Each structure stands twice: as structure tokens, then as C-alpha cells.
Image (cartoon, rainbow, N blue to C red; front, side):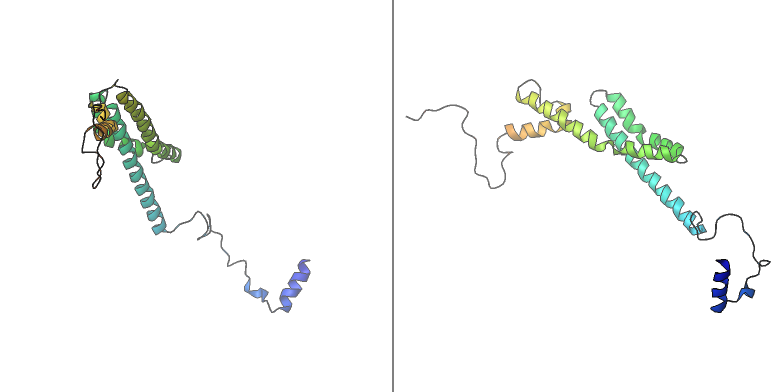
Length: 181
């Protein structure tokens, strides 16, 4: 079959004398332009994007840690304050340690996605607190209730005039019963 291919190439005008095995050099490593090779600017760009990705991750982690410190600070004031105070330096150190380990960076990215869970938990706790206020078992003016937003809702419902929308003529019925004669 090789003879047939050579005859076909010879008939097509292919010049075999151009192929000289003495001029061919073998170079170690991958071919230039193949996968796994980059030019100098590509490596710098890759490092920059990795660096900016790590900086963004550090900011997200710092924000999450600060928010957790604020929530903890409701019950444990000094602990919450300390967590908020140290959130930035701690997360910078953690991201620096994880920078050379892709699996650590991936784990930190998943950890930074905790914010929706915190919001769900805060809302559920707020619903429980609002039920307690409605039943008269909790004081809506406590700092914890203000943090959850229950105080704002309670104030809108219970203070006259503030809960009215602009242009609304609705007024609450009188508190005492007056029979019509």
C-alpha cells in the first residue's frame, strides 16, 4: 500500500528530494502553540487573573466573616466585635496559604457562598421573633429585634399615621366599642 501511495504522490508532482533527514532537529518539550505552552504575556495575564480572582475571593470571605461576627455580636458582644475586627487580616492570611493549592481555593469559594444560607436563617429567626411579639411574649424594642427588622414591622403596624401610604384615607377603627343607637 505504501508503494501505491508513493506512486500516487510521484504522479502528482511531489518532490521527495526536499525531505532531508539531516536538517530535521528534535526539540524537547511540547510544540510551540500547542496546549500547555503559553507566550510570556499569556503567563502574566494568567497570573493577574488568578491574583484578581483570589483578591475577590478574599473580599467575599471577609464580608461573610464580618456578617457572621455581627450576628454573633448580638449575644456575645466582645466575640462578635473581635470577629468583625479581624475578618480582613484573617481572610487575607487564609487566601495566601491557599493560593498554591487549587483544592483549597475551591473549598474557600464554596465557603464564601454561605450568604444565602445566612439570609434564610435570619429570616426564619425573624419570623419566630415576630410571632413572639404578636403573642406578647417578646419586647419588640430590644436590640435583637431591631437587628432582625421585627421592630420596624411592629412600629409600622402599631404606631398610627406612620404606616399610612401617601394619599391613603384609611384610618383604623376606634379602640372602644360605641353601639349605634
